[in-house]
Length: 453
Image (cartoon, rainbow, N blue to C red; front, side, top):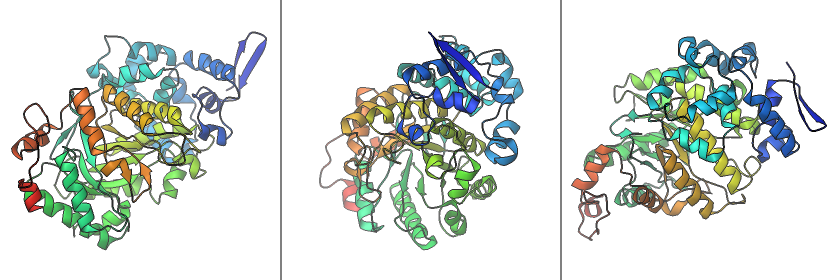
C-alpha cells in the first residue's frame, strides 16, 4: 500500500509502510547510511502527517518484515493481545500520542493496554513526539523488577556497577567494586563485561562476585555479560544470578549474535530452575545493531530497536538497557542524535512494560562529550529511568567508550531527590556509607569495607 501527501505544489510519495516509517523518523546517520532517511525536512514532515492519520490497526495488517521470514515478526503478531488492544483499536497513531499525553492516562491505564501495543505502533507514535513528550509519557510508567533488590520504584534510581578490566584482573575489579559501593552504586547489578568470554573466566568472575556479596551481605545480584551459550555451559557449576544476552529486532540480526528465540527460551528456563530469583534475564540493545549486521530488511534503526523489546518482553527480564551511543557515529553522529535516540528507546521500552535502563554513553570518535551525557542523564532521570551505569571515572578502559561515573549517579540522585533501591538503601545506612537523608558520609581509613575487602 502506497501513501501520498502534498505540501504546496509538491507531492511526496511513499511506496509502503516501511518507507513511510523510515522517512517519518527524526534524522540520524544510521538511516542515512542505509539510504532510508528522508531527503529533506519537508519530506519528513509529509511522512509524519500521513503517519499521524494512520489507523493503529494498519500495523496488524501490514507487517514490515514478512511473517514467514522472521521469527521476531511471528512473536509480535502471535502474542498480540486483541482484548488489551480493544480500548484503543479505533485510534490513529496521532490520536494515540494525544491520548497518552492526557492527565487521565496513568501507569495503570498504560499497563492495561501494553500487551495490545506492538513495537511498531510504539515506534510510530514516538516519531511524532517531541523530546518533552517522550519524557512526559515515560515518566508515568512504573515498571518494577525484583531479585534481591527492587528496581524501578517511583522516586528510586538504581545503578549497574560496571567494574570492567582489560585483563579480568581480580584485584582491579575488586578495587572498582569497592569504589562503586562507597558511592552507593550496585543496587541494580554488579555486572562485568569479561575480557575473555570463556567458561573458565566467567566462572572465576562469578565466584569472586558471589564471595564479595555473601561476605558483606550486599542485597544485589551479579552478572557476567558473557554470551548466553557460555552461561548455559556453566549454569550448574557457578553461582549464576542473571543470564545476559545482547538482542536485536530481527531474526537475521539475532542470528549474527549467535542466538534465536529457542536458545533464549532454554536459557530463561534453565536460569529460573536454579531458584535464585524469579526475573533472571538481563538484555542489552542498541540502535544500529541490525543495520551493522546488514540485517535490517530496509526497516529504520529506531523501529528495529523497538522490535528488540518484543524479544525482551517475552522473557520477563530483570534488567533491560539500550547502550545508546556505543555502536558509534555511523549510526548516531552527535550528542543531539544520541540524546534523541535514548529518549525514544526509554519511552518505547517503558510503554511496552520493560524495566528499562540506559547506558548513557558515546564513543571517542563521535561528536559528543560529557556535557551531552550530563544533559541526557538528567533528562532520563526526569523521565524515570530505572537504572544507569556506574563506571570508574566514566571511562570504560576495557570496552574503550565513555559512560557515566559513580559520581554522576550520586549527582542525579541528589538533584532529583532519588534514592537507591530500598534494600540497598538500608544496607548503605547499615554500612555507614550514607545517612538517612542519603548523603554520603565521610569514609575513614578504618571503615569496615576498606579493611575487609
